[in-house]
Length: 283
Length: 283
Image (tube, rainbow over all chains, first blue to last red; front, side, top):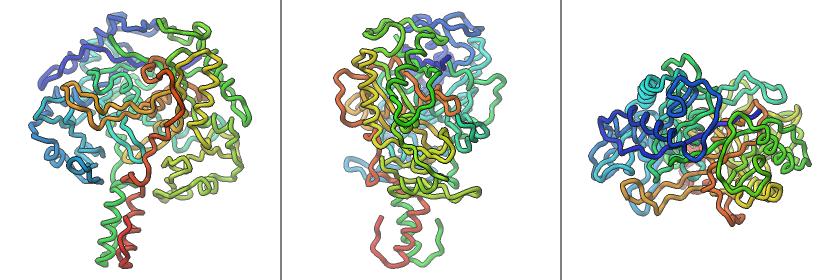
């Protein structure tokens, strides 16, 4: 026996505009992708209530970039440059770094509680003179998209993940993470389970939807214009009877619990000022 | 057209012991997994110089957990508990958090430059009274494993990734990351490329091997005893003529550049002490 899943990202998604019916566009592109077959036809004995070989199946997870959700939801604002929009979206500055060739890099907590460079405001893949803000509620966006796709394809167990690209502390390079999710287990909570030696697994909560987001980026890509992917074979994370509740917001670590809620230099400077002024410590 | 890849994790890997020929065990389990077919037989017109339907193919990436690399390499130490081993592996303490039911959680930089809880020392999936240390040089381990598998299966383009599980700043839950890599592009550097509106992509360096690691965890799992996975379809990241050079070490952000090299509370406290003592600032 083995475990196996596949990820594919069809071509053909048109440019999304404010007011577009995103679910219709996504549904179209996942249908077309399947029926042209791609390069790996899949033979798989799974329960389908959909249109046969095309479209979506029970246990599928549809992954979409937040960009197309934002565009459809009209989260496009005029901006001669990104900086004012970043300021507007910033709830709390976490850290900054001067840059030789532009304004300082700002890593901030945004309205979704996400800690990201530039508050997640995006100046790429959008017409000049505009920037894209993140969706207001990506979990709700995921739930709406899921409801429409379930109906169109006649599937009961369907996941939807909305992704964004983010940097990490301590590591170079960017990966995609989940900022919205519906119909799919956000974490795989193995606490209470045992390892291969029968000992309790006490720490292991796996951020399943972040791993799904990362996997999907490998076929979506930034420059290739494939904002939609389908992950097939992870049905064990797509339970029946899913109800709205914790979505990807579950993965946001509250700042009160976060050991890195403030950058090192910022925290040092604040401590230095408090110490020099003889104030009570305020860590 | 679409982009597609698949990830599968065969059953049947035995417990690995110090001195085992890891490449032989990995080679066996990826052969067996293929020939029993799993649930998704794949028809794919790719160049193969291997044994037909079984085994590895050009462009494959083999992903293994660092645990089995450590075990084969004898990185097992006796330890009544993990804490002394963590202390020994700690190069620099980054942050700590008291825990109600045990010793403080220590997030530290280890010998590999990785910032991780407990320095990456592992007390699970290993016999009682022992802990597992990370491999001494996971990039070298990946290169050795790659060389042996290339020879066995007669493939030229082959990637190997060694993974470990890690927490993240600002996000709950754990994901797998790449701590060793050979034969595969560690990053996808899109700087110099353009987005869909023709503008230069100036920031986007994608941590490809971390995304591959994350994807593979979805089928490997922690409790299921599948420490090996194969990713097929990402051949564009598996170039011909790969030479040892930057491996996954490339993704470790040097502490001098890291805005979060020290936890918030620790930096604040250090600043407070310096300020109160009237010392020169040392951010």
